Structure formats: structure tokens, C-alpha cells
Amino acid sequence: MNRRIDIFRGDITKMQVDAIVNAANTSLLGGGGVDGAIHRAGGPAILEECIKIRNRQGGCKVGEAVITTAGNMPAKYVIHTVGPVWSQSNKQANELLANAYSNSLKLAVENQVETIAFPNISTGIYHFPKDIAAEIAIKTIKEIISKHQQIRQVIFVCFDDENYSIYEQLLSYQCGN
Image (cartoon, rainbow, N blue to C red):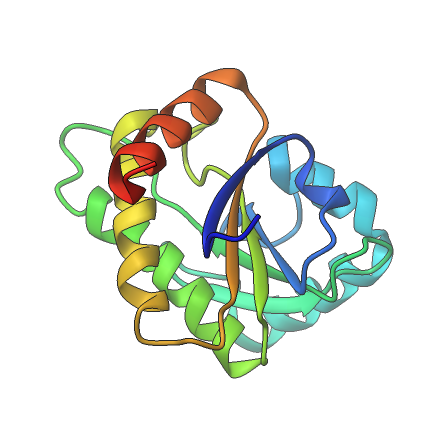
């Protein structure tokens, strides 16, 4: 993987990177999908830190991000971000999704993260169209890492074949490979 942006098909909880990103909910107390998998794999340390954050600031707003330990996972950190629930009437959905990616990378830079893995934020139970979400994710990340050379590698970890195919096509086209 010699590109700064890459894709991987599999389980984000197994990634050996500095930080993995969690598609969290506003409560930060775990849930289904990738959120539940990260809380289960990381163990109680993640939930304990999330409770402290929640007590301090009342959770995490849509588009924002917070950071905790990765607990029992190979990564050092988990950056929890909340993506928007998709609806055609939500005019801010695209901007909020871009904010989830950019605020995650901002925390990564602040914490000297060089390698980071993202799930496909909001494309599960939040029903964001996968193709639109992928375009927003790639565009946002390219803009930010062009300004922050510290981020050596961003990996989109796709749990399903459909997301993997979308990212593969977009990255091949955009990277000229």
C-alpha cells in the first residue's frame, strides 16, 4: 500500500493503524454495526472513556468527533464521529458527513496519528446513499491530507462488497490507476 489513500475489505477492529474511526451515535454508548463491533472488540476501556466524555460534554453532536483509547484492539486510538441520518429533506446531510470526516482528521493531526482507518460512515442504518457518501469521504479526505503531510495513510475499511466496489472504482478513477 504505497498510496496515501487506500481501501481494504474486512474488519476495522483488526486494523494495525494508529487510529480507527468509529461511526458512533450521539450517546457514545455503543450500538449496532461498526459501533457495536468496536465497543465489543475494544473492551470496557472505550465505554469508560466515552462515559467520561458524555458526562463532560453531553455526548457527541452530528458531524463532530471525540477520541478515546482503542482498548484491546491493535490501534492506539478510536476516533468516534457521528454521521448524519440520510433523508432527502435533510439539506445539511452532505455537509455534516464531510464534517464527520474532517473533524476526525483534525483530531488525528492533534494526536500525532500517521495512519488512520475509516469505516463507511452513515451508510448502514443511517441509510446514506453509498455512492454519494464515498464521493464526499474521498473528496474531504483528499483536501485535508493535502494540507497535513503527517497523515501518511488513510484506509477506507469496507465491510461489504458494495462499498468496496464503489471505493475501488472512485479511487481508481481519481488516482488514475
